[in-house]
Image (cartoon, rainbow, N blue to C red):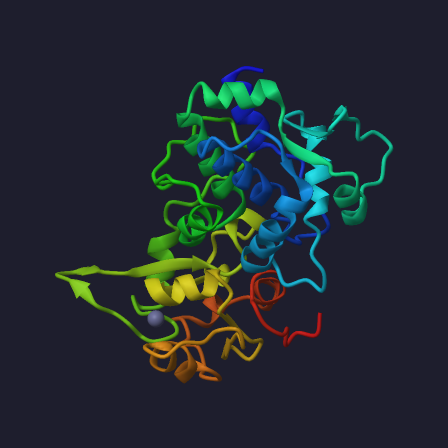
Length: 302
Ligand SMILES: [Zn+2]
């Protein structure tokens, strides 16, 4: 496999799909594997070694689910042609086999990049950052890229990476930020923050309610003007918007300094509405965000 093929392979991973549900399992496992490689750890890791940290990543950066399945990406990745499973006897074929957590643990199954891919990345360490940035860009909003890189232990500045592959991705509307800020009169829709430097709004951003990575459109009905802090809190699922356009706060959120003023005080408060009625957020996008991102109980009954 060439470098270019690997980049494209990673950009076009086969991801489990059901409607517009998020499945960050493969990207998170691959990011962990890239971090291991960067730290010169062994190519293959036991499932029992990966299970706990991957579950923690799924809880922190994945949607709220009743149970978590770190075993799924671990035994499904071989089909993407970059990963293999092995035990003490050698490579384990996955064809037609069912792997549960118990089997993976009991049989001491290891997983990791294939030797070919491992060598390819090792001989060109820049690839670690490139691959990590492709994975993050394709599956998570930019506000949380560095959080994820830090959580998996990747030592790299993953921002501002050029896209070097033909990723199957939709182009973003470059006018999105401008039209969202305009729609909300250049104020945070939650706290009203509107600091400017001269004429330029500072730390004011256009947030997607349904992530661009999940097919959310670049329209006013899917956008909110938010200060950097409330944008991040929205993307991490610490807060969400109810169908009555009120702010709801995750019960997992806590803290002393700033928690009351920047988060809790807004609980139940109405969103500052956009300038025109037609720009009101769409219930469908808000419902997606509550179901797939918000770290709390869904008020939408899904
Ligand atoms: Zn704000």
